[in-house]
Figure 1 (cartoon, rainbow, N blue to C red):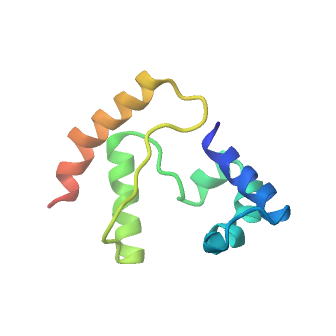
Figure 2: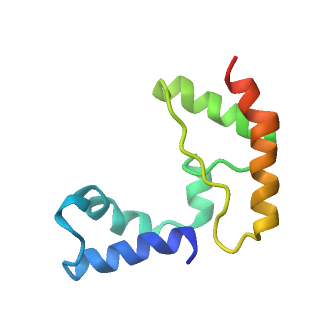
Figure 3: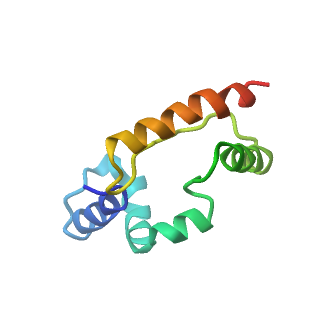
Length: 102
């Protein structure tokens, strides 16, 4: 299942009254997120993509705006191959994370 298809599924379950009560946060966001295209998520900064330097810059911008203390990362979106996700993870670990610690 593609990453953004999860939101469509949650939106459907929400409309059908099948999300558990403790999923209230998901329920409020599902309809909105289900309508966003991948490109919109990138434009809004919800998904950070690019070279290690680009991602580092974007993380820095989020850190300044949001007083960011934690970062949740996922390296496999949509139909990405495992090899591409593994390469992205390796680049993040070797090129981005060490610079974030400073």
